[in-house]
Image (cartoon, rainbow, N blue to C red; front, side, top):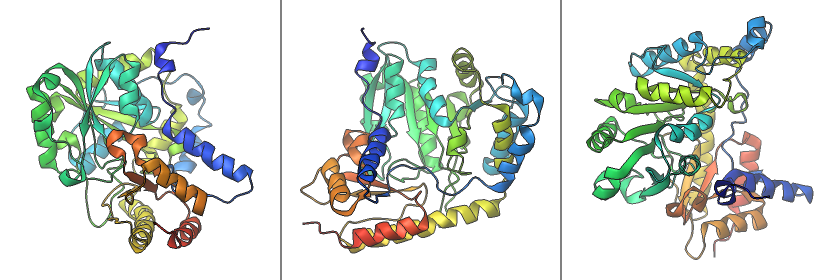
Length: 387
């Protein structure tokens, strides 16, 4: 039996390895604290669950859904964008439902990348940008993100010949894994660059609603001219604690949205309409609920950052997202330091090199762990010897 080259060359998905490491420890009867995977531990809010209970009894929801999503869901998405970003979108042509943002991000490359084509992929970054490019037969040109430049790409450093052949530019702010944020001025610069080289601009905006300390994240669609060349991916996974329900959306340029719809309609049959009803409810959660939810993460952030600094690991509290991204002590690789924490403290973190070569020298800690487990993890880290 011979498997396709794309499967043979496919690296193990980062978080599968983390899950297996945790399972191996627990099989030995060892209690493990995980700061690894960004999977909210806080329940999906009751109004959203109540909406599902009603929707399940609707016979129309027991049949095949439409790939682009219920008209009511797409309208709710556009209404959210109007309230939140003051952007007017057409539900019929500029919004589409996704089976989680990950699915849409993975499939987007099939819309733009032919075999041999180039995608501009940030490094470090969510691994699916590169994997989706590979599945489409393309190649990734990694655009370094550095602490010195606040984890933003320098478009002027991208070689002109590479920019001319590139078909796609991926961005993600607020950023996973670094927690970096971007201004509207930066997005304006990104749009100008993409237009200059006729590149499709794809923005992963899944963390815009998880913010702290008064910060309000912009949408790339607020940038001048973005609607000509950009599509933005969003999700309710982190905003409304709905990772298991797999519901997201893509919005933006109508031709780009239509291309994604055509790909999806030939690959999947859409998301359960009952879950889309949940999404409608989640898109209308009150600002007060969102603030209370984010306050839980903010308090966890502050406790984790404090203990990291106490043991000698420089950490800065991010203004958005669910992650603490920190440089590791000298003398370690990311993997070796993550292994040290697992071996000596039974604490799991994500090694930074899992997000690309530029992630070497860093680890990521997720805040999606219950408060009592956060406290236990902090207790274990407090005794860590770095030398």
